[in-house]
Length: 199
Ligand code: ADP
Ligand code: MG
Ligand code: MG
Image (tube, rainbow, N blue to C red; front, side):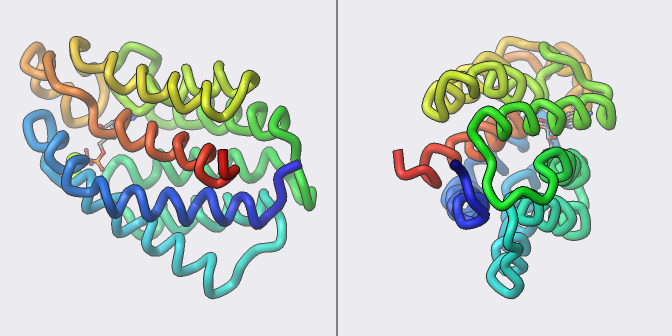
């Protein structure tokens, strides 16, 4: 079973990996965006880590809804409301249970990803974070490591795609040949599950 401490670790290890990879994420956002994705997420996840340290919620749902709220209020870019919605909706789906199973997390994350698709209007293949998140949720029933692999493969597979949502879509065919920054950061988020579980 996964308790609040697991979810707090998930958020803090994600904040650390976003810190480590911020330059790379911003570099990916340079040819097909406005070169701020790493900076945006770094600001957001630092605020998440600080909020969790100051007032650690006692339930898995509480951790994720707080994290989602912090992302929405601190990240100005498109990714803030999208990631914020992902975590808030996932947290809401977990309810106020003290512990949740991996299956419950997979189900809740599915609801979170669905909410991101509703909010942003992106579907798989549009070259967005959805291309990492959907395969990750599909694989989450197997294991965290399977989800991590699926997310990483999904992120890499955005390279030959033409963007149909977000800033990169303004480039039309010129968006082809570049890996999507948001799909790349989503793979970091999913990899954080493996790290938080100590696998
Ligand atoms: P901005 O484009 O406002 O500068 P970021 O650079 O932080 O925001 O985030 C860009 C990422 O957000 C993209 O790489 C993409 O993965 C994701 N994104 C943008 N628009 C959408 C959308 N409508 N649905 C899902 N993801 C999106
Ligand atoms: Mg950007
Ligand atoms: Mg921006």
